[in-house]
Image (cartoon, rainbow, N blue to C red; front, side, top):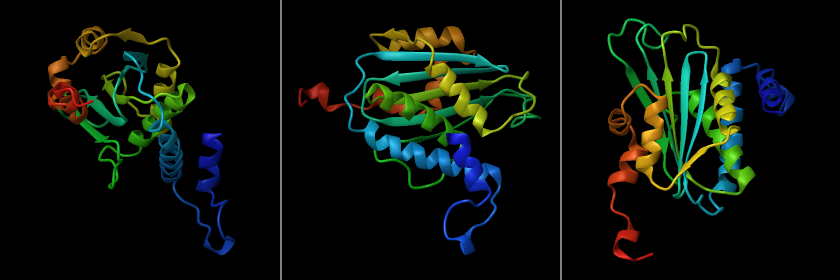
Length: 214
């Protein structure tokens, strides 16, 4: 269904006929991913939190994916780490890490890392609305040198979907979640935390629960 909508948008199949335009496929893909994701988020935000920490994993085309879900109100982040000799870090001598995030109220600007952000966000909200649950979600991606040719934003959506179809590992604490993730990902957990707005907020921001307010 998603791919059919994206193709229809690309060829200008919607709207008033005189205003219809062909648009690049990547624009239509992101437009559909973003719109559907926002629609599903409205349901996600009304649901109860998950009761545990979850980690979903997928490894494909020399990419490693770890989806961390935390028991908290909706927030979302995608962090990508590109190793040297990969497409977005061809001449680098170190790992290039970039990410985008949003809190409960969403974003007002386009995500810095582009359409992959919205593709992965759609996959996450599909899963949460299916379960009628809410969570704070951080997706970690490592693109290793074997990933020599990116095959499109759709690849991000489908890999996150594939991860979320697996049985997650469940934990009582975020520390246990990190210990498991460190077995999958090559980059040390402290570096992920350093590059993550959501993880830093979760770990270091004092919450009202600490004062017995809620």
